[in-house]
Image 1 (cartoon, protein in one colour):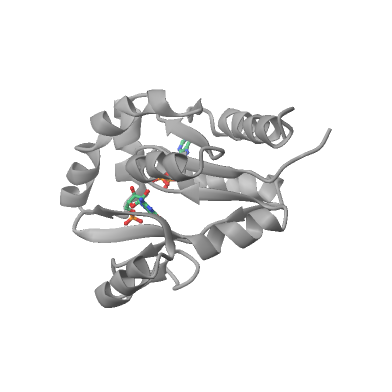
Image 2 (cartoon, helix red, strand yellow; image 1 turned 45 degrees about the vertical axis):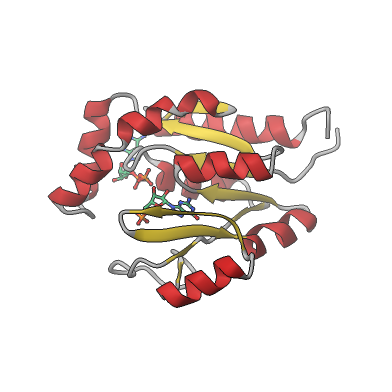
Length: 191
Ligand code: ADP
Ligand code: 5GP
């Protein structure tokens, strides 16, 4: 059966395991490319420019918005984040599926401009587990954790608009489910 490169958009609450799942699925699917987003926030310890994000100044971000370089962009926590078209278009044309790890509003905006995009929501098994993972990761201050937890209800409410939902309880099971979803859309009979 013919396969088709697809744009997969992964989102879900902070701490639900998106980064972990994306790293695991990329090990399994060498043809899957990760889009690196641009942001105006400062790099955290260990984050490299062009790997974690493209770290842009406010002026540079504005210039690129005005140049039409973004597929979508949004503001969070006083900073801007966006998907560059240059991260997506050429890879799809070269036959590589692309994964975007972006927030729920960004994901729904992508679906508006790219109806073919496949939206996958990564849900935590429970709010308690989510909070424990977020704290256990140890990368945010208490204030930042509270801000992230404050968004969870809004984020979970948007899961119904996604094409697929994966509950990240047991990691291996979740990776298998995501792998099967990607196979399904890449070999869709409408391709
Ligand atoms: P996100 O990218 O969604 O913010 P992370 O991938 O950073 O989340 O995961 C948050 C924390 O939870 C990390 O410490 C990660 O190791 C852990 N984690 C992720 N998935 C699981 C899982 N299925 N079971 C237990 N811990 C997990
Ligand atoms: P962080 O600063 O913790 O890396 O990310 C903060 C938020 O920005 C997360 O919800 C993340 O999903 C979101 N984000 C990262 N990249 C993008 C992007 O390209 N577009 C949008 N809309 N959100 C993004």
